[in-house]
Image 1 (tube, rainbow, N blue to C red):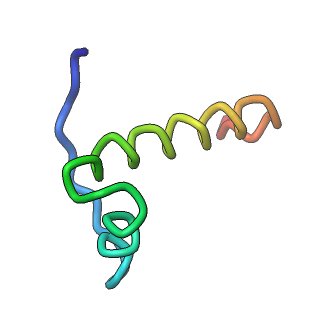
Image 2 (cartoon, rainbow, N blue to C red; image 1 turned 120 degrees about the horizontal axis):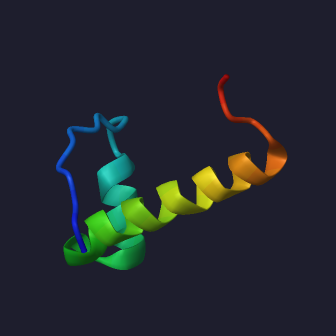
Length: 50
């Protein structure tokens, strides 16, 4: 998988909440999947910026 690193600032406590659900070693995968799901949802809803 080709990836591009980016910096994302999360609210205080959010990384710990993610870790509690999926484990620290799966944080990046969880964030990628969440972003992909939201992109698909918005694209289907026609929410793309023009």
